[in-house]
Length: 106
Length: 62
Image (cartoon, rainbow over all chains, first blue to last red; front, side):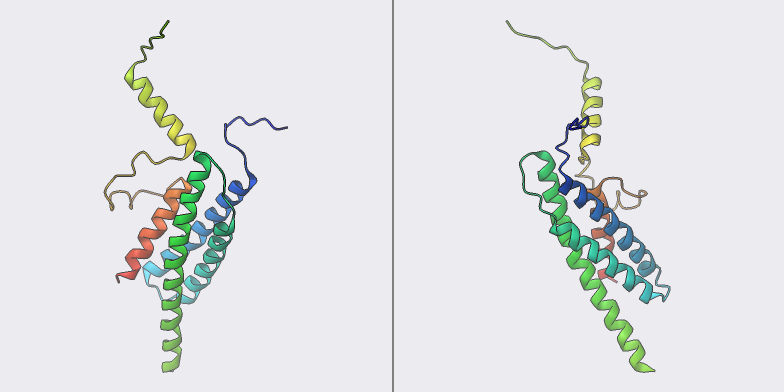
């Protein structure tokens, strides 16, 4: 049925964007936790950052062209995901560089 | 003729918050940074991305 109790458009694209965002948040917050604790499990953090980055990329790729508040919000969310994609990539590069230089020492 | 509404302000306030919650809007966006960062897991997509930004920025300074 096409009933829409919430009053939203129910655009499946926006639902997908939300789902990717959620996964990205879960992966990257887990990566950040390990990274912040500085426990030496950097490889694990790297793997989680990579998974989170992949989800961010999928979320950013979702088209959110449309009119109305719901789409405005989706575009703002996309902007935020773009910012975090850049920052997460920077962090990942740094960790990989650090890890590579550590193994060179041995 | 005209219609006059006499709705108590607290009722309006409550309704605004309810609508904002449902829409996932941020009524407290102008809160100073740092005050929001220690509260548990943020509930809206937008807040979750904000939290990631803050934590990534902090790591950058280390």
